Length: 284
Image (cartoon, rainbow, N blue to C red; front, side):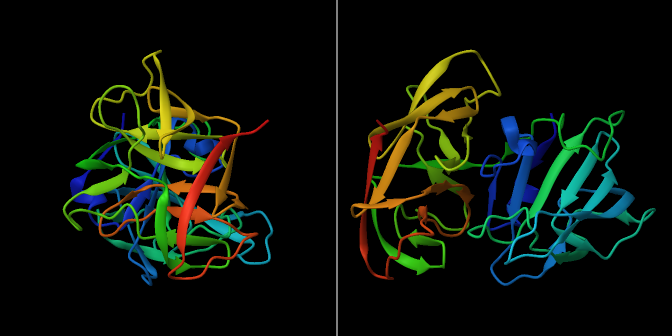
């Protein structure tokens, strides 16, 4: 299983293995790496020789580019697939970890509430590198800390389709990655994914395996929201409200420098400074 350690992950503001609707992220077989806000140059999270770069067509949206780019690197142990970067590298180039490889591209694969990032996946060396399905599960070897959240917070950031709350707060910015506690029965694990607006999500933690055949309850703000089999989480059919107003979902991820739950709410407006209380109930 390809593993990304602290030497790579600590260079990014946050990461997610499950917060995507695309099958490449099923079972945590891809990771999205988010740079510091405002950073436009993408740096390579892997070392290897460039095999190919291709422009690929993306879904049409009014807010993104019609094209994306696929970069293939031979790492020796596997083929790395990178997306969302307009490449400044060519086939035959050797790239070290941290080398600049191009500029970020905001393509039609992005939902409107998603920030710029590098998508990274790995294929076995003997597999078709142009296909996303069949990619290898990715492990992360970095300190993680699960934060309890009571479903409340004040709005500190507002976009057209989302708001970010000030809770739960990162207890030690820069020292480790944190996320919302999954509320599982055994051990401490961190939630990852879009709940419930993406079909499934995940949880990460020291004692969490890819799949062990054991189902555990997953809860948020003391409410049952799904079931976990190993790392993979299947959300329940739930409805979310913020101060009584329906919202699309909660965005869970791992963050290094600051933290706060992200509410996906394209059809609702909340103001900076407004106190929010999340209600979770199962759909009829």
